Length: 363
Image 1 (cartoon, one colour):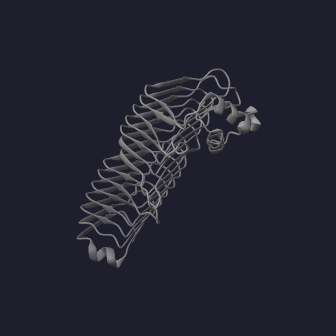
Image 2 (image 1 turned 90 degrees about the vertical axis):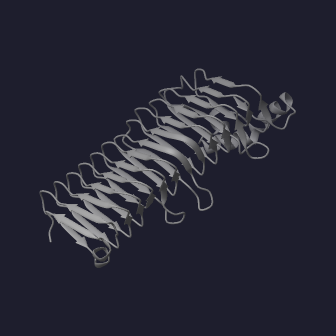
Image 3 (image 1 turned 135 degrees about the vertical axis):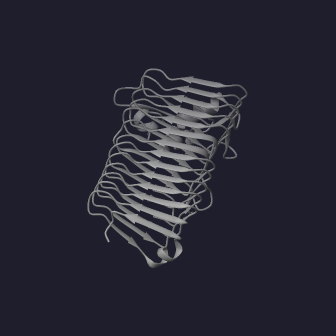
């Protein structure tokens, strides 16, 4: 089902979702355009009420190009065993390059692979996407959501991309239990991704790249067990900004965290058990910063960072290395633990910090 008066637009949407209409479904662009021309003479699709789409047996592609006055409810179910379903709310292909939804958007998938995208669309209320146990993908690009946004994955690997959009309310992303989940929350150097608040939960193994986004209130990130990689901030478009507190918990596993952020309130980083690497660079923390390296051989580097009140570092069990360079705080408390722990503090940090306490470290 394609609510559009342009065949090429539908083919472009399908191409962006990695679906070849001609090869996989036997649809020819000229034949499709002739059918569309025969059925309609309007330039843009518009519906004053709500739209409900229920997929049937087989693999479905749903592309909506136009304006919907009410809400959009989509059920993508009963895909073939080796296939999947796709839904695109695509405003960029319509005249004027933008679509609107007067209510909210709700998309529900099944146990196979589902692909959902919302691009160049203004959604007045909230958007929710709940997909099944397949390898799922979700994209929000160049859009605005007046309420909140939720994504729930399944038992397999999920990929979520939020790019250059604005979500006024809370964003809740649950990537499910896959061992190779990926989340990309990114801005460009001219257009920023802005969220009201954020909770992001990964599975057994997660790669999260959050580049230069703005969170107006609090942000919380849990990556779960397994090896994880979390990157916040970007060199080109600046650090991530959080208007409240920022909490990151990477759970068990060998984790790698790189953080460049401006946090208005407190920062809490819990690396969990494993051989972890943390780089906190070029950041500003309004209140306290607490880092728990967990059990294992951790390497913690804090550089060019300003902490408004107190900096706490807990190295715990293992052979840990803690390095502070060009860092400022009212006081810094560094706690080693069982194992051969080392701490390095450069002259600039010693001059800037009013009080430095360290115990169970060498030297």
